[in-house]
Amino acid sequence: MTPLIIAIDGPAAAGKGTLAKRLAARFGLPHLDTGLLYRATGRRVLDAHGDPADPATAEAAARALRPEDLARADLRGPEADAAAASVASIPAVRAALLDFQRDFGRARGAVLDGRDIGTIVFPDAPAKLFVTASAEARGLRRWRELAGRGLAADLAEVTAQVRQRDAQDAARAAAPLRQAADALLLDTTELDADATEARALALLRERRGIVPPG
Ligand code: DC
Image 1: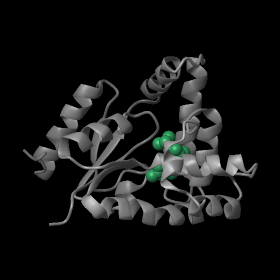
Image 2: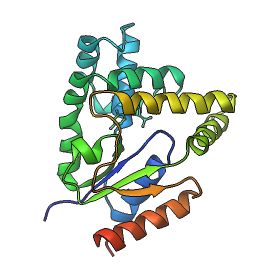
Image 3: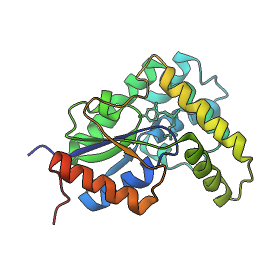
């Protein structure tokens, strides 16, 4: 039997990560937050005082990535966000990270969340969700997340940054953020984490006949 792949894509702060973790637990599958690959690549470039927009430097960093890089504590924050978005727009970086993602999924099945999982990484995944929410709702979530980590920020500024990063992810030539034709749309603007999970499980069951084991 082919192991199950659940592909979750969508813009920043739409609730993909929380949903991916919960579905992984429900289905007994490993979870990969693929944004961490781009974040860790950007971080490696910054460590070496390189330019995250330079293709050769960024590709070398992506190829040198080790699993322990994904556990670093400094992968979030404005500097890491910007470096990740830069390296993510470089085709050679995306190509270098493709095998890691595919090997991860093929081993035992997986829930992967990112921007191009359903379109590029696993185009044949039987379960694809495109998770989104209004920019205002996503800005507020990101702002709360920062506040929870003790980082004071301006809500309007955080929302503007979320919009700007989405625009960058959607406009880039290499694997732009878009909904796969066969992805199920899940708008979380009015949903909390529990309601999002319930809706995702209902969509997978009703539209794809996929239910958690047990
Ligand atoms: O989901 P995130 O904010 O951690 O992602 C960090 C950056 O990496 C963001 O600019 C989008 C990009 N990314 C991507 O291009 N493809 C993915 N599969 C995951 C993330």
